[in-house]
Structures are given as structure tokens and as C-alpha cells.
Length: 253
Image (cartoon, rainbow, N blue to C red; front, side, top):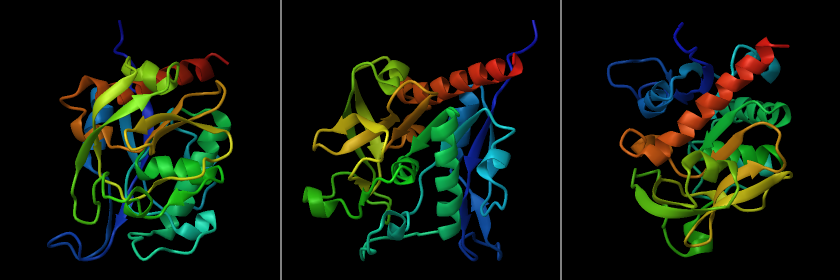
């Protein structure tokens, strides 16, 4: 029996400014290796995308059976019609343009997608939603970590019964979710529904309404603990499985 095919998963990379990598003058494109490792454990083949891309999302994603939108800096608040808060950091207009277009394409076509932290915010903004620009202000405390200093926080997340997310992890609650974000979902984007909440009431996960395709957007970082936590790895496993099914479906047409 031939080995199971490893589906290609697109993984957009963040631009690293010149001088940030010791001993390397030029800038670079990078993604944390924990994403790559989690996808490989799931039996997928991750391929990094760089920005900007002049081609349309349909052309960029044509070779791929799935997509991961990873964490990173803040989305430009002008993308959701707000003035920039003083705490906003790491805005990259080129990355915003690329990932918002990729998210819109995935939502429209049903391309299997796992969106993580910034990625979940990209999905919400792509559908006209807005973000809390600095969570300590509406929540009154820094309960979700601090990306500027690298402080991680672990907390539980309650999941909506019957959601894609709850099905993927086979549980109504995840007890150990690693967060490091100072922004979060405010007004929901059109056609999206909340399917996960932290104990302080913040929306921690989104999915499209209806049953077209498989897209799960989570505000925490499952890749950080996936190597030792089967429930977090299960998100990557579910993405890889949906990507294989999509390849089979397209091949049979």
C-alpha cells in the first residue's frame, strides 16, 4: 500500500526586519518552528508563503489543500475603521493585505483553514468585524498575556456544543490554552459565530455559520503545547484530515 499523501498546507510567514537576526544583515521571512512541527506531526507538508504576493489569492493558494494563519503583530486598525491605539505594535501592511485576502478566499471557498491568535483576528476583520485594541482596558487586567514582553498565560476555554472545534478536540472544554495576546475579538464579522470563551467572557474561537468547508479560528496558541497535549495537537490533525479529504474530492471531479 502506498504511503498516505501529505497534503500541502500554506503557512504565511512574518517579515523580520533587518538587523533582528544576529549576524545576518538583511531582513528575513520567518514562522515559529512549533507551527511547522505540529503540521508535520499531523502528516501535512507545510510550505511558507512570503508577502507581498502580486497574484490573487486564488492563484497563490491553487497548489494547497489547506491554510494556517499564524500569530504575529497587530492588524492595522484602519482595516476595521478605528484610530490606532497607543498600544498597537508590529503592524505590517503587506502581511495584512496578503492574509486578509487569503482569509476571504478561504471563507468563500471552504478551503480547510486553522487560524491562530492574530490569524483569528484576521478572519474576523476579513468579514467586517472589529477588535479590542488593548485588552487590559475593557477587561481591566492583562489576563491573556503580553506579546511585547513574551509573557504567556494559561487558561481554560469553554467550547460550543456541536462546533467544529469541539468535534476536533473531542471535548466541551479545554483546560490548558496558552495565550499571549493583548487584542481580541470585539464585534463579530458577518457570517461568523463564537464557539469558544475564556472564563472572563472573551470570545476565544470563531467558526463560519453553516456547513461550508472547515475553518476554525482560535485566539490562543495550540502549537506551543501541541507536542505534549493531544487536545491541542488535535486541531492540526483535524486540519490535515480535512485537507486530505479536499484533495480526494477535487481529484475525483
